[in-house]
Length: 135
Image (tube, rainbow, N blue to C red; front, side, top):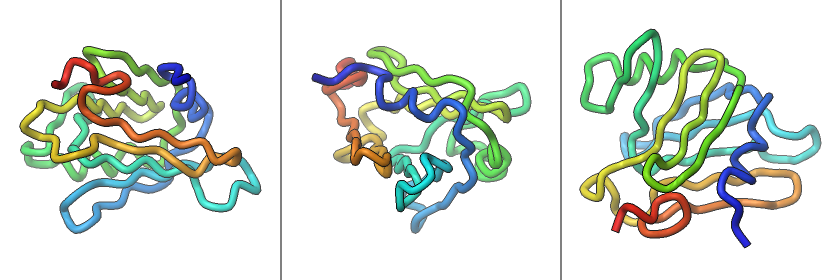
């Protein structure tokens, strides 16, 4: 059974070291993860997250959004939250990622996380875990 924030909270204490824009279609974040896990822990966002950085909130349409996103790295995860109505929030010591799109922003999936040593992963979709309000 899925426990909100159970998997996501494993990121606390990990360093986010990479932000990668994939064909201006989605953005990928990489975290250090457990030694010996093989691949790094990777969060793919298929919607553009809001960025809280330098005292303001940036959306993908804002000039300087990509720069604000890149400035989050390297940053260490200090907390995570995941709940219906507010989606996913990853707070780093450099700023925060907030994933809670509008229905118009979603094509199929919202985000997915994988790369944990035990093989655990999660795919977030509208109408499902932590995004039940998006139907």
